[in-house]
Amino acid sequence: MTTLFRWSLSTLLYIYLGYPLLVWALARVFGRAPMRRQGIPAVSLLIPAYNEAAHIEQKLRNSLSLDYPKGRLEIVVASDGSTDRTNAIVERFRSQGVRLLAMQDHIGKAAMLGRTVPLVRGEIVVFSDVSSELAREALRELVQNFADRRVGCVSGLYRLKESGDLRAEGEGWYWRYETFLKRQESRLHSILGAHGAFYAIRKSLFQQLTGRSINDDYLIPMHIVEQGYRAVYEPRAIAWELEAASLRGEFARRRRIAVGNCQQIVELRRLLSPWYGWVAFCFFSHKVLRTLAPLFMIAVFVTSCWLPQPFAAVALTVQTLFYGSAWLGYVCQRRGLKIRWLFAPLYFCLGNLAMLAGLLKFCFSRRRLVWERAR
Image 1 (tube, helix red, strand yellow):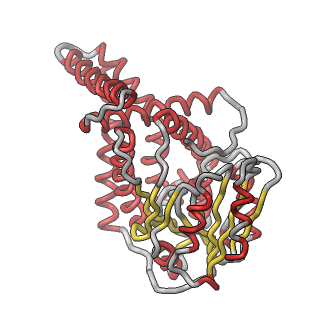
Image 2 (cartoon, rainbow, N blue to C red):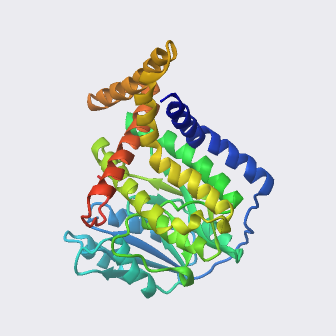
C-alpha cells in the first residue's frame, strides 16, 4: 500500500506540477514559433447554434464589426434544429451577408459540422461559439499564422468576463493555468485541442467526425495534427466568454468534456506512438494522465490509512483540510458568499469530480449524447 501511495502521489505531482515545468523547459530548448505574416485569406466564420435566440443577435453584430475586409469574410450560422426564434433572427441579417444553414432536426454538433463545413466558401474556416465575443482585431491576428504552411489549425485565447462569483474566479485561475500549458505545447509542436470559443482550420484538412463525437474542438485539431500539420496557439486573438454557467451547469459541462476525453483517448490512441514525437509525449502527459487523475486522488486518500505513523495522520489531515475547503467553497457559493482563497480547491475538486463522473459515464453508459451548451 505504501508503494501505491507513493506512486499515485508522484503521478499527481507530475500531472499538475512536473509536466508543466518539463514542457516549459523542452519548449525553450526545442520549440519554434510559427511564421506569421499579414494576409487576408478568404475566411468563413462558422457559428454553431442551438436555441440561441437570447444571444444570436449580439453575436452577429459582434461578427459584423470585426476588422476584416467584408469581401473576404463569409459569416455563416449553422442552426442545429433550433426550435426557438434563432433562425428568424438570423434571417434578419441576410441583407448584411449572413448565411443561415438550418438543420431540420437536432442531430448534434459533430454531425452538423460534418454537413455544414463542406458548404462554406472560405479556404480558412473559423469556428466561434455564440456565447463568445471576439476582439475587433482577433480574426486578423488568428489567420496570420496560416502563412506558415506547416500550420493547419490555430486556436485563439479564451478569457472570461468578470462575474464576481467564486466559481468564475476558479475557472479564471484554471484557464490561466491551461493557457500557460497551451503556450508551451504550441511552441514545442502542437496544442492538444483548441478553444471552441474561437479557432480556425484549413478547410482542405477537415475530416468528418463520427455521429457520437463529443469534443469536436479537440478532435478536429488533432485529426489535423495526425496529418502532419501543427496546431498552434495565438494569444493575441482574444475571445471573451460572456455567459458564465451555473455551478450545476459547469459540472454538467465538465462531465460531458470528461466523457469526450475518454472517447478521444480511444479514438486517437495512435498518437501515443513514438512516431509522433513531442505530440505523443504531450498527449500522454496532458490528456491520458489528466483524465485518470481522479483515480490517483482516490488511491492516495485510501492508501494513506496504511502509512506508518505519523505520516498517515499528516497525509489524512492535509487531504481532509483540502477537500473540506472545497466543500466550504461550495456552501459559500450556494449562499452567495465570496471567500477568495476557497476558489482554487473548489474548482480543482469540481473539475476532478466531474472527470470521475465522466469516466464512469463513458464506461457504463452507451446513450448517444447530443450537443447542448451549459447554462
